[in-house]
Image 1 (cartoon, rainbow, N blue to C red):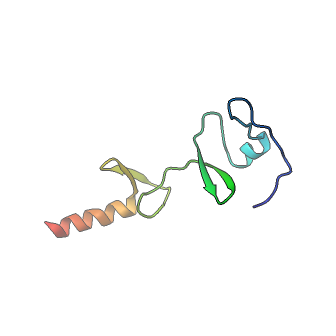
Image 2: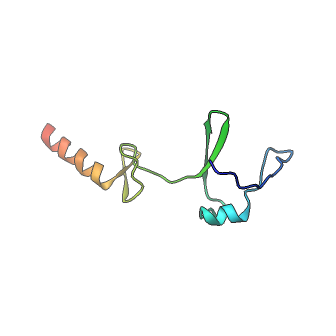
Image 3: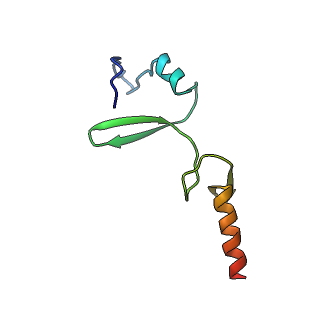
Length: 85
């Protein structure tokens, strides 16, 4: 992990401001969803990107039984369903 040298205080509601330079670098806009991870003793913020539940791909997503899957995985599921018939 690389230090930015930027320090922010947590306000009384537990909020921090992500500096504009970092928001611009990661294309984070107002109201964008952010995922929060814990990695050992670190808190990691990441812009949320929906992805395929099977392979993690973020391109060409479709909904299948209320889950997001990519077109490649959807095609594989369709082939499996044909074999079962």
